[in-house]
Amino acid sequence: MDLSQLRQELSGLGFNDYLRHLKPVAEQVVDGKPLRIAIVRSYTVEPIEPVLKLRLLLDGYLPTVWFGGYDQYVQELLDQQSALYAFRPDVVLMMVRIEEVLPAFVDAFPSRTPAEWEELLVAKARELAGLAERAVRGSSAQVFIQNLTLARGSFGVFDVQEPNGQAQLVQAFNRALTAAVSEVRGAFVWDFDAFVRVKGFDNLLDPKQWYVARNPYKQSEYPAIGSDLYRHVCSALGRVAKCIVLDLDNTLWGGIVGEDGFDGIRLGHTYPGNCYRDFQKELLKLYDRGILLAINSKNNEDDALRIIDEHPDMVLRRHHFAARRINWNDKASNLRAIAKELNIGVDSLIFVDDNPVECELIRQQCPECDVVLLPDKPYLLPAGPSSWGRVENIRLTAEDRQRGEMYRAQNARREHEAQYTNLDDFLRTLDMSVNIDEATAFSTPRIAQLTQKTNQLNMTTRRYSESQITTFANSPTATVLSVSARDRFGDHGIVGVMILEYQREACRIDTFLLSCRVIGRGVEQTMVACAADLARSRGLSVLEGEFIPTAKNQPAAGIYERTGLARVSDSETLFRADLRDASITYPAHTKVSGPAHAVQSGAER
Image (cartoon, rainbow, N blue to C red; front, side, top):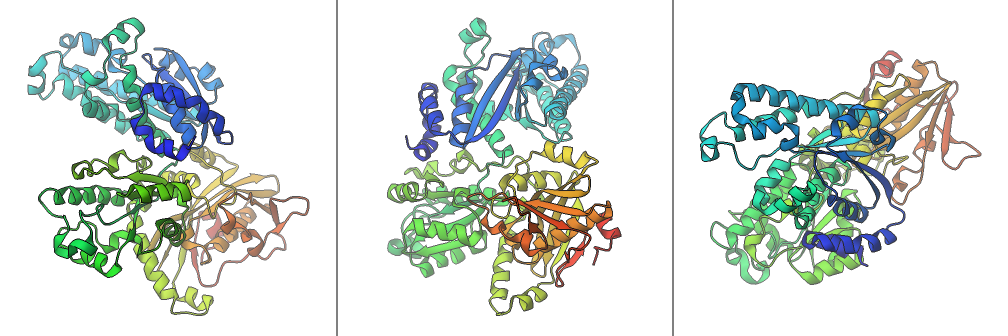
């Protein structure tokens, strides 16, 4: 079975297809990462299991799913000795409905005033968030709470005429839930209400199943329900694409520029050109939330760039594209070149093209890359990007929002670097400054994101959730550090992470990772020197680090040796420095500021 092909076909599968594919896919995915999912619920949800399992298997996980008792979610979450916590989940799904959460609100709405109901709803939202917090603390799992939705108000069409009608109060609950959950590190809201607005209650509900088995939804709709939930889970697990690689002709505009010319392509405010313009608007939304855009097109570069730069109806301009390959080379070679230029893996790309032959070429030669074959009907284009896999980001950090600008600055650095033949001379002109600081509520989401997404310069590739990072940060025997960098061309944002653990006389580096954007500019050396200073400030005499090789982290090889640690003779992965006589120094060309301990020991420069 071609797993990459099946991954592209998931949106068209019915419930029975999920059942049919589940076993053969599980037999192929034998070396995936174990993932334990606990589902606590107020209603029957078992049909969601094959949907979640198949999607997780295709993303490289080995899932195990545990279901709590019917409408027992409160007891299971409160009792730290319950089977839920014995299961040791990585992910907890709280699947609840308003009919069970507040039955009187649904069945006896006239019994209270709107103000009284609002008070009760806000309190219930905080209660659910409190249950999520218990789950995070008790298991270090990532928790997802289904928000609430209501089919029809008790007063029918009059309900919407009232500013405090039943439907409006449900929205007040959802706003209160979002506010309360935002205070719980590692907990998220599953926006089920938005999903229902798109799908429609009547399309989802199955009255017979509800009255017979307390399952409110049609079995045929569980692929859609599970897929929407998985968009949230997938993002929290770090499965977010880094770059969308786009064709040009019949993709960003209608027609072929080499044949139709500048004035002949379809792009504008009338059909079908308005479809391509709106498609670009949707791509711009992805760009604004941190996903890079690139071009891979067989075309004359001058002709294509003229449209990008000058056509009045282009939404995306040259500066929106982090990399370009506009030539007559095969697109698989171009794709690999784009990944290399951006310092990201091919598995971090989504390839988008209107040509089925080109799409099949990428599937065959770059099977790790997601492939999107565009529909041949232009009016279907704008709805596409929101349905593509791996484009959701459940925590948007400042670095995500600024990523496009960061890559523009990166191109300026490359042009500047090309003027120098001596690396030291180039580094001195960068005016590099590095700030190393302890984790805060602001930096924790970015720290967790980096542990989940960084593959190349990542010494151990250990993946941590926000709640796990918080546990480290609150431990008296550990320190979590974020590493930020900036230079004369701009701010890189948070680009590195160190997690230090203190054991007797040794400081052990549990996690050491760095974005490829700043490799080779002294940040690695600065991080090791800061770790040494922090260890000395605690009276420790040994600094230890690990390098665990993977298929992707070869750029990390040799860093510890170059910065003052030596391989332990009887170990393949362990490195150590005796801090009483080791020479671990900061790079001369870098200005460094750091956490209080490092500053007190003289690390600030």
